[in-house]
Image 1: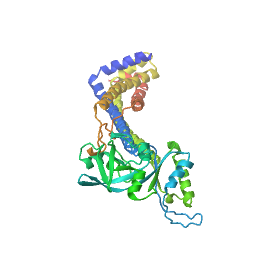
Image 2: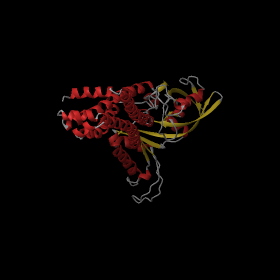
Image 3: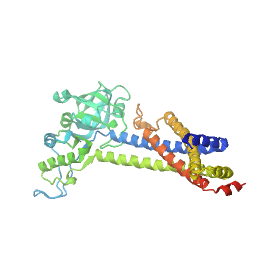
Image 4: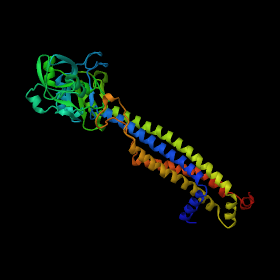
Amino acid sequence: MRLKELIQQSWAALRRNPMRSTLTMLGITWGVISVVLLLAFGRGLGGGVASAMGNMGNNVVVIWPGQTSMQAGGQRAGKSVHFEYADVEAIRADVPLVRAVSAESCSDFGFKIDTRVVSFTTRGVELPYGEMRRLMKMDDGRYFEEGDFVNHRGVVILGYNAAKRAFQGAPAVGQTVLVQGRSLEVIGVLSNKIQDSMYMGPDNEQAFLPLFLYNELKNQRDPDMIVIQPLSAALHSDALAAARGVIAMRHHFDARDEKATPAWDTVETAKIIQYFSLGLQVMMGIIGILTLGVGGVGVMNIMLVSVTERTREIGLLKALGARQRNILSQFLIEALVLTFIGGLVGILGSWLLTMVIPPMPLYSEFYKTANHEGDIFLRASVNVMFTSCIILSIVGIVSGFWPALKASRLEPIEALRAE
């Protein structure tokens, strides 16, 4: 018997009991919607967390001075390490695995605006720092340029919330602030951004100065930390090891002594976030599959009832020469038709829901951005739909196989005697 004829007969059999078939398909429809929405939510949540974490920077590694824990070169363990600006220059010159490097220092400064004084955590940075730390995106004004450093300009950039605090909602760019008696021009305000990973506080709340200006105000030369960016994410470990090696050689400690130069590697953190996202999607998928499985049990139950009701029909078909595989195919395809019609409605319904449901806030209103950065979007991708179809196929086959096998094994004489 042709597949087309089998499908037509299966559809005709389902139409004999439209209410029962519709209710059974609704169970499958709801199960598919659950699978797609849960997978989409898991994907969206993972993407939102990854986006917020990624606002820390583009594969950056932050290195701090620490304390040695190993003896080396006649030096005792427990010696404090103090970075010098020459360390930054040495990394820039001798570590080809590093794409960019910037010295960084951090402290609190009081900013005088008219008669008010507002205190901000302030970072002194070099020009490459903005691209590494994703500070180039401005709500107003501009980021530092080379001329600011060459010409020793008195300029400052404020974080989004820092500018609001300083100027109480008024435009900040072009305004003048006093820091330790020195007049500085506000040249830029950072865009509001979700930042789930940070050190020394979120960028929204801080001020940024050219490193030379910070050093003049603090009367220091050497940096508090060093920020590097490897050539690629795959080279992050090698780049960090090479940078540590340069610092170790200059300060006479063992390059393997990680406690001498503790570091935060955002590439490793990003991997943890990816594993979290994958685990979340797997968990959501399992919950959705269990829900879809309940619909599959409904299909199996209806097909068993159908076999019982059509026992005489099965006996007649076998008496007329129908083989066991013909009966098996007919009832299995009937179950698959029932499953796939409900599944198709479920896929279309879930896709429409992902289009209609608005982004869900992952963070508080305090961190809201105009482009919903960091929010949870239900992402029903092609992969999610494809996965749902595979799950649906398995449910349909498993649900229909036992009733179909039972029908195919009926003896013709016994089936014809059934009431």
